[in-house]
Length: 384
Image 1 (cartoon, rainbow, N blue to C red):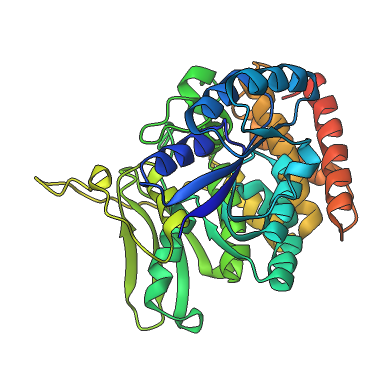
Image 2 (cartoon, rainbow, N blue to C red):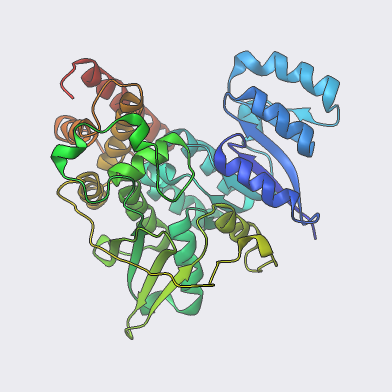
């Protein structure tokens, strides 16, 4: 039976990769909704490609242009206001809006979809308790799209939760693996964006370079698999072949191996529990190859330790971590702070802001906005 898909964040890299999977599915999926932020031209291309039932865009200034385009090029596609589109029922919702902006859409996706393919780690970092509560109340299943958590999800099919000894998240190490703090002080934006193995958006690429991406994934793993932080480990694996591992209490370690292409975990999340045949994603076993694993340098790359610290501390600290990091990354990309200024700015905000524990989505959003404004003020100080 054909399954309907809502793609939240369709114009980003995950959204575009999802459409590739749908296009090659032989009719297994139909696009119910394409929801974008501001990239109208990319959205227009996607509409002409798949002619979804519904479409929406967050940027209200671009709505008139979108309506005119639909009338002329895809009259069978209905425009929906952004808030209405979030409440559209479907079989599978792909939550791929980057940053904390994806929290509320993810909550709505849990309420209106049978399954959520979650690619937005920040929503779990900022609102993991709320998301777990929504899943418990609705019965909606979450299949992670992040390659590491997707790998863990696959490995866990071989055992029971009570049999888990630890989760081992692998990290590529980014473009600066092995560099000293002094060397990192002078790295450029272009160097930081030159990831050795993955092709990703700019924000997650910088997060990978600082190891904040892995720190956020540690928090994400805590909420997805409900294990204490003491049982979630990180190993640097430069080849990015082993996407993560699960250690069981009998001493066995299961690893998921695959090519470094986000289409593979997206495909898994859409087809689960089945596995379609796809020759394009075969791992090349011909010839020789090696697998190397290293402990992360948590002194030089402080973001990983900051994430562990905030994960243990609670929701308010996680929101400060995430919000301050997003502002810091944006400032680095704009040339306003140095690469090493990213962890320094985040730690400064963690030590400065005294915030209450949020209990609702509205309180999370309010706190997140407050953190961002104060962090932007610190950026303008020129100290980082």
